[in-house]
Amino acid sequence: MKILVLGGSLFLGRAYVTEARRRGHEVTTFNRGLSGPDEPGVEAVRGDRTRAADLERLAGGRRWDAVVDTSGQQPSDVLLSAGLLREHADHYTFVSSIHAFTDWGTLPVNEDSPTYDCPADTPAGQPPGNQLKAGCERAVLERFGASRSLVLNCGLLVGPHEDVGRLLWWLERTARGGEVLAPGDPGRALQLIDARDFAVFGLDLLEQGTAGRFLTTGPTGSTTMKGLLDACAEATGGTAELTWVPDDRLLAAGVEPWTELPLWTPDQPGWNAIWQADTSRAQAAGLRCRPIAETVRETWAWMRERGPAAGPYLQGTTPLGIDPGKERKVLAC
Image 1 (cartoon, helix red, strand yellow):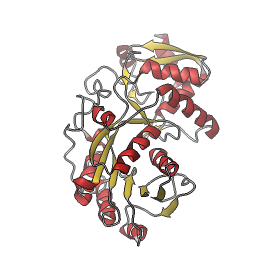
Image 2 (cartoon, one colour):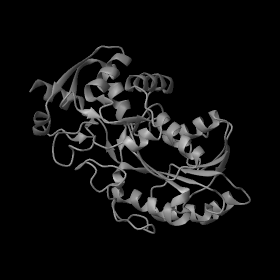
Image 3 (tube, helix red, strand yellow):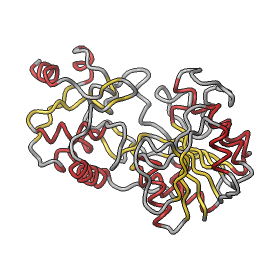
Image 4 (spheres, one colour):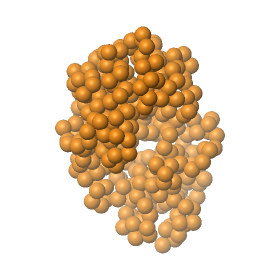
């Protein structure tokens, strides 16, 4: 097949490109060339998806069997790209987010859960970020139609080449050893998906010409907070000693969920259903996820090959990870 990847040089886009090339597909990537190098063997076209002239130059006389959009963040931009590409491709995969569901975090969600009422032509900067993916989905459906569109609502991605750093921070923390502040309930179920498994599933559906929506993340209970941190400690040498501190003590100490202790979600309203997404439809369609210990080992191996990070890991503009002094203070309480 001939596949166009919008993006393709970062994390999930890179995983799609690598897997598509492994399967023998012809891959074109379209990006600005700012986030990282393209994979060898692709046709790399430089351009900005927010500019109609760049998209028209990309389309030119080309035609693809499918588009994979891993970089769409703004509905008006996705509306533009899908509109200019609809006569140049048969199928459009849009990687959306679990954030598009209005109830996510508060109630369990599935593919039929309501999404935010964000129009397809929403201009840049409006509304808040969590709503924008819902507008991007509508943009694809408006331009390609339901029978030619595949929407994958992505859960939390981990694995080599991660570009946010939640798992990476835990690996670096356990690598330093000593007493490690382990948050909340050790048995708290997590739903994490390796970007490579996501790409395998997405390409399987693409090759079949599948349309519709799939909530794509790790199955409920596929790992726990303890399972994840134990895997991190083992992969990084086994010198870390995990000390579990309950939610109420962490909150009383002013520890911020999700950012200061990445992936920690207290048993509080708005947080207690974050790891309760129903993935049964995706599993029935062939989604398979590798054990978290394998992802952790291979991510740590990539980190050692990569070398030290250039700067702090960020959730948007918020640095990830607790200050060492604050960690020691909480542990001493």
